[in-house]
Image (tube, rainbow, N blue to C red; front, side):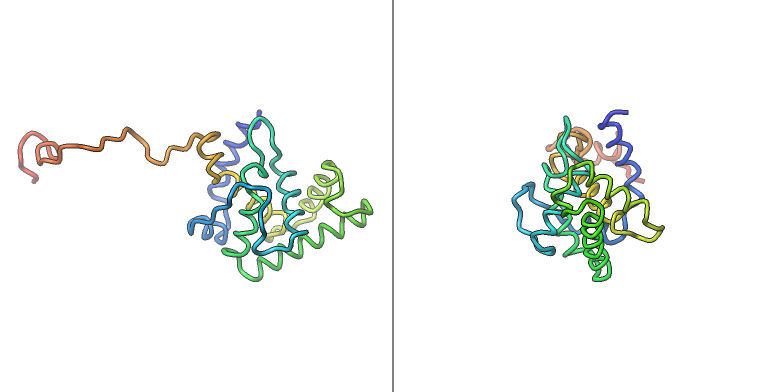
Length: 187
């Protein structure tokens, strides 16, 4: 299976697996500007850099744009501020702290300075430790996929999303004959 097929399948699966907070934020129009040089509105600058590393581990750039290319870190930050409850925000920030502590314990350096392989190993380890309740790793994966698949570059260039299906016909005769049929009887 190639990356495009994996993205398509994930999109189908993601449809029913979005939390209510993420769905609320998405429906209210949360969008991130596609830029790596963004200013965080919820997290601290160092945490923002961690989020960039995490989303890059989850969806790195290949022949298609990666999470960093379409502004997913800014989307995650904005969603946390605008759509998530205080409890969910706290869980996310605690997860970042635990991830940093795990990195220090296992590799004796900050998460940001670990190799990509070590970062992925830490994230996988954290995911394997998570129970069935909404965990930090589940939140970050959910937000990453949501931000990625709802970004304009991915929707238009990769998924070929067409917001208005069918042919556009601007000037259509709206007489009763054209709406109902041959005769003017509506009933």
